[in-house]
Length: 226
Image (tube, rainbow, N blue to C red):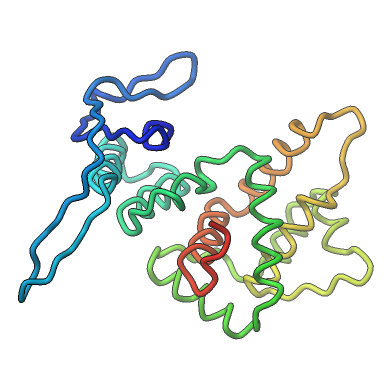
């Protein structure tokens, strides 16, 4: 993504171009600076203009998928699926899979502001469409799962006076936002450490849910966050 943000493309790559150093991922070789758009002649003389990054995005998705077996992490599967399906650089750059825990916190705050103004029935339809496209269906009775986990930070937010959560996806988003914003913080922990902890707990409870929320927020009727 940093390569694209610097207005460069990498062209065709293979798994041999993917390298790691000190825990960081890098792309080696095959870098070019061309930014020309691809013009494709369609049926009846129609013209389709493709972004210069589209080829890169599709190629990267293919390489990532080929490097992994069928048991790779759900979050990565959802991310590579997003790469293949949407091919939009701006939205991909802010995907939860690429974000830090602090970035995911900011994402949930922004999403809840948007979702809070929508009719629940319309929002429910948006989630159903996203689930059907991704094939990702988190368990419905999420409040029961929270109680089974017995994590005090989550329980305190769930039982906070005046909070009336249902088992809807919209309510789950609101709950996640409230955990990020109001979850009890250890006075000895830094903000980064606290966000790392919240992210670990929520992603461990509902792996991939942030990716589903992102799908609804970016590709549904909202399209405001980016």
